[in-house]
Image 1 (cartoon, helix red, strand yellow):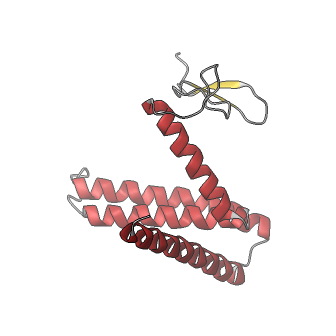
Image 2 (image 1 turned 135 degrees about the vertical axis):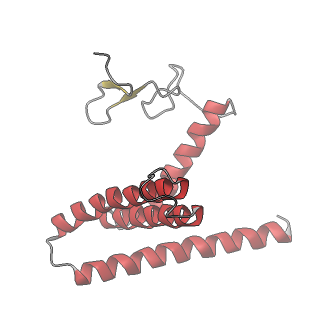
Length: 159
């Protein structure tokens, strides 16, 4: 491995570690301050994602001036910040669900990378039936419900 590549990999591992340390600190702080039961707290942290995604939408509407009454109220930098808030909130929610959040995240990232490579036609293993190894069709038209193995459509039914 070249010296520059080795340095970059080391920096990336340090950043990954810092992110998860920060998430752990946030979760510990939120747990300490919580007045809810652990079950309620878990649900509220998951619901917090909806709030943050809504703030992304509001920032996009504000950055594009789509509300004629208000005009341009946000910048694209505001949108970037709101997207980061979504990521932080998702990581906190994931860590709330499992103490092994970093492993779960890394495994899911590898899965998504493999799936995207397969859909691009890169050499990635897949089932002979056109699925990506996890019961999902590679074209995204149908998915298998992991609890019942019942296919469900991702498109809305026609009236």
